[in-house]
Length: 105
Image 1 (cartoon, rainbow, N blue to C red):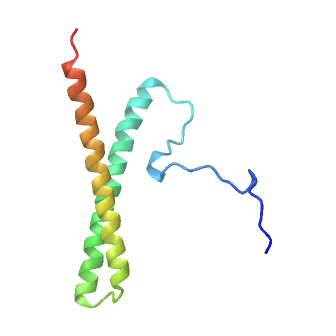
Image 2 (cartoon, rainbow, N blue to C red):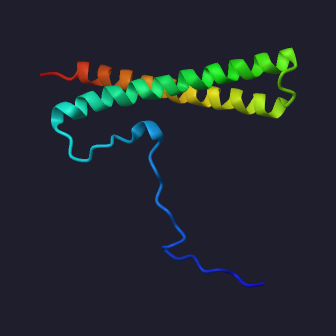
Protein backbone atom coordinates (compact mmCIF):
# COMPACT_ATOMS: atom_id res chain seq x y z
CA UNK A 1 0.00 0.00 0.00
CA UNK A 2 1.35 3.40 -0.99
CA UNK A 3 1.17 6.20 1.57
CA UNK A 4 0.94 9.73 0.23
CA UNK A 5 3.15 12.32 1.86
CA UNK A 6 1.62 15.43 3.32
CA UNK A 7 2.76 18.59 1.61
CA UNK A 8 1.89 22.19 2.16
CA UNK A 9 -0.16 22.11 -1.03
CA UNK A 10 -2.55 19.54 0.42
CA UNK A 11 -3.13 21.47 3.64
CA UNK A 12 -5.51 24.36 3.25
CA UNK A 13 -5.83 27.18 5.80
CA UNK A 14 -9.02 27.45 7.80
CA UNK A 15 -11.54 29.89 6.42
CA UNK A 16 -13.49 32.19 8.75
CA UNK A 17 -17.27 31.75 8.91
CA UNK A 18 -19.34 33.52 6.30
CA UNK A 19 -20.53 36.13 8.81
CA UNK A 20 -16.93 36.96 9.77
CA UNK A 21 -15.80 38.06 6.31
CA UNK A 22 -15.71 41.84 6.14
CA UNK A 23 -15.08 42.46 2.46
CA UNK A 24 -12.80 45.41 3.28
CA UNK A 25 -9.26 44.71 4.42
CA UNK A 26 -8.28 48.31 5.15
CA UNK A 27 -11.04 49.51 7.47
CA UNK A 28 -10.70 52.46 9.79
CA UNK A 29 -11.20 52.32 13.58
CA UNK A 30 -14.75 53.63 13.24
CA UNK A 31 -15.55 50.91 10.73
CA UNK A 32 -14.11 48.28 13.07
CA UNK A 33 -16.61 49.17 15.79
CA UNK A 34 -19.42 48.96 13.27
CA UNK A 35 -18.09 45.70 11.91
CA UNK A 36 -18.03 44.11 15.37
CA UNK A 37 -21.69 44.94 15.87
CA UNK A 38 -22.46 43.69 12.37
CA UNK A 39 -20.59 40.45 13.12
CA UNK A 40 -22.59 40.08 16.30
CA UNK A 41 -25.89 40.75 14.55
CA UNK A 42 -25.01 38.34 11.76
CA UNK A 43 -24.06 35.63 14.24
CA UNK A 44 -27.31 36.07 16.16
CA UNK A 45 -29.28 36.01 12.91
CA UNK A 46 -27.52 32.79 11.94
CA UNK A 47 -28.39 31.20 15.30
CA UNK A 48 -31.99 32.30 14.85
CA UNK A 49 -32.06 30.87 11.33
CA UNK A 50 -30.77 27.51 12.60
CA UNK A 51 -33.48 27.48 15.29
CA UNK A 52 -36.16 28.23 12.70
CA UNK A 53 -34.84 25.52 10.35
CA UNK A 54 -34.92 22.97 13.18
CA UNK A 55 -38.50 23.93 14.04
CA UNK A 56 -39.56 23.73 10.40
CA UNK A 57 -37.85 20.35 10.02
CA UNK A 58 -39.71 19.03 13.09
CA UNK A 59 -42.99 20.38 11.73
CA UNK A 60 -42.36 18.69 8.37
CA UNK A 61 -41.54 15.43 10.14
CA UNK A 62 -44.69 15.61 12.27
CA UNK A 63 -46.95 16.37 9.31
CA UNK A 64 -45.38 13.68 7.14
CA UNK A 65 -43.70 16.09 4.74
CA UNK A 66 -40.21 14.94 5.67
CA UNK A 67 -39.68 11.28 6.46
CA UNK A 68 -35.99 11.55 7.38
CA UNK A 69 -35.61 11.61 11.16
CA UNK A 70 -31.83 11.90 10.83
CA UNK A 71 -31.99 15.27 9.08
CA UNK A 72 -34.37 16.58 11.73
CA UNK A 73 -32.05 15.46 14.53
CA UNK A 74 -29.05 16.98 12.76
CA UNK A 75 -30.92 20.29 12.40
CA UNK A 76 -31.78 20.24 16.11
CA UNK A 77 -28.19 19.47 17.11
CA UNK A 78 -26.86 22.29 14.92
CA UNK A 79 -29.33 24.69 16.51
CA UNK A 80 -28.49 23.48 20.02
CA UNK A 81 -24.73 23.82 19.46
CA UNK A 82 -25.11 27.30 17.99
CA UNK A 83 -27.23 28.36 20.96
CA UNK A 84 -24.73 26.90 23.45
CA UNK A 85 -21.90 28.77 21.75
CA UNK A 86 -23.88 31.99 21.83
CA UNK A 87 -24.60 31.57 25.54
CA UNK A 88 -20.93 30.86 26.30
CA UNK A 89 -19.81 33.93 24.37
CA UNK A 90 -22.36 36.02 26.27
CA UNK A 91 -21.11 34.61 29.58
CA UNK A 92 -17.51 35.44 28.69
CA UNK A 93 -18.48 38.99 27.73
CA UNK A 94 -20.33 39.44 31.02
CA UNK A 95 -17.36 38.07 32.98
CA UNK A 96 -15.01 40.44 31.17
CA UNK A 97 -17.31 43.40 31.86
CA UNK A 98 -17.56 42.48 35.54
CA UNK A 99 -13.78 42.13 35.76
CA UNK A 100 -13.32 45.60 34.27
CA UNK A 101 -15.87 47.03 36.72
CA UNK A 102 -13.93 45.51 39.65
CA UNK A 103 -10.72 47.25 38.63
CA UNK A 104 -9.69 50.07 40.92
CA UNK A 105 -8.62 53.35 39.46
